[in-house]
Length: 271
Length: 282
Image 1 (tube, rainbow over the protein chains, first blue to last red):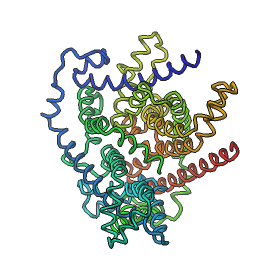
Image 2: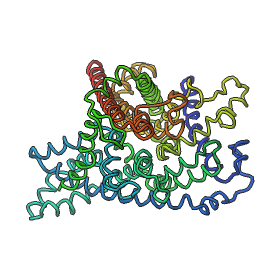
Image 3: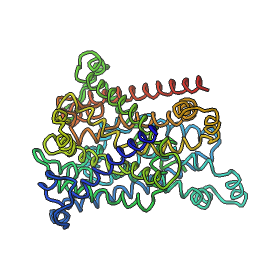
Image 4: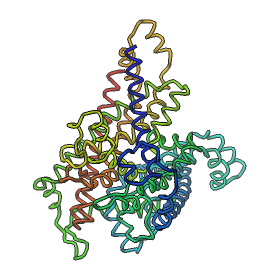
C-alpha cells in the first residue's frame, strides 16, 4: 500500500516535471510576453501564428534552420560512410592492423572532443575554414567518427562470419561484400547511429560558437542564444524559436521512436 | 577501406590533440609569437590559481550530485516501469522526451523557470505561501551550480531510465518468484537481486553520466555563463573563456590537459570501484 502510494507519487512528479515546462513552451509560442509572465500555463487568449510570422519576417530563423539542416545532413551522411567503411575493415581484419586501428579510434573515446577547441580554432583560421559550413561539417565528422566506428564495428562483428565467407567464395571483393552484405544487414544499426549523430550535430553549440561569427552562417543553437537579451528576453519569441528548432527532432521522435531511442542509448551501451 | 576515416581523424582529432599538448607549454595571446615556458602553466595552475582550483571543485561537486541523483532516480523509475504495459511505455516515452531537445533549448527554458520575478518555480512557491523559498536560483552564488545540476538531471534521467529498463529486463523473473515464495520484502528483493544483478548496467550509466556532466558546457553557457562570480563555472567553460575571452591560449590548453587527466582519473576510479563491488557481491 505504502509502496503503491510512493511509486505513483514519484512517477507523477517526474511526469509533471516534464509535461509542465514543455506545455509552457508550446503555449508560450502562441502568446504575448505579458501573458507568459502572468500565467504561463493558461491557454493563449487567441490562437494565432503571429509569433511565427514575426520570426519569419525578421528572417533570423530561416537561414540558421537551413544551415543546421545542411550541416547536420552532410555531417551524418559522410560520417556514416567513412565510419562504416572503417568499421567493416576493422571487423573483418583479424590481423594486427585491425586491432591497431581499433585502438587508434578508441583513443578518441578517451579524449573528450572539447579539449581540442583551441588547436582546431587556430588550424581553421589558417585554413580559412572559420565562418564556413564546410568547416563545421569537418569538425563534426572528426568528433563523431570514434563513437560511430565503435558502435558499427560491434554490429558488423555480430553478422555471422559465414555470410561474409560465402560471398568471398563467390568471388566478391571487399567493397562488394561491404555494399551487398554488411550494409544491408546492418540497416537498423546504421539508422540508429545516424539518428544519434544527427542529434549531436543538430544541437552542438561549442564549435559553432567558436568558429562562426557571421550572421548568415549561424546554426540554430547560436541563434537561440542570441534571443537571450542583455537585459530582457522576449520569451514569446524565444519559445517560438525553440519550437521551430525542435520540430525535426520531435518529428523524428514520433515517426521513428524505436530507432531514435535505440540510437540515443546505443551511444551509451556500446561506448 | 579505413583510409578516409583515418585521414580525417588523424588530421582533425589526433593532430590537434598533440598540438594541444604543445600549446600547453607556451604563453601565447594569438597575435604575437608564442613563448616557450615549459611546465610553467601547469605549475601556475596547481599552485597559484585559486579561481581554477575553485572551478575544478565546482566541476567535481556538479559531477557527484548529477551522478548520484540521476543514477538513483533512473534506477528507481526503471524498477517502477519495468513491465511493458500501456502506462509504463507511455511514461517512458514522456520521460525520454527532454533528451531529444537541444541543450541550449533546455538551458533557456530553465532560465525562464528559474527567473526570480516571473519564473514558474517561484510563482508556484509563492502561490503555495512559501515566499521564503522563492530564491534567486541562478543569480545567487550559493545556488547557481545546484540549479544547473537539477536541470542536467531533468535533461538526462529519461535516457538513463531506458538504459536501466533494458538492463533490468535481462534479470530472470524466476529469481523474483523464488524470493517471493521465501517471503522476501520488496526492499530485500531490491537489495539482493536487483542491485547486484544491475551492477553492470549501473557501471554503464555512471560512466556515461560522468562524461555528460564534464561536457555540460551548453547548459552553463546558456543559463549563467559561469556566473555569478564563477560560482557555476566548470572546466570546459573556463577553457573557453580563458582562450576566447582572455586570449590566453597556452594557459587554456594547459587547463584542457588537466581536464583530460581528471576525466581519465575519474573513469579509472569508477571502473575499479564498480568492478571490485561486482566481484564481492558475486
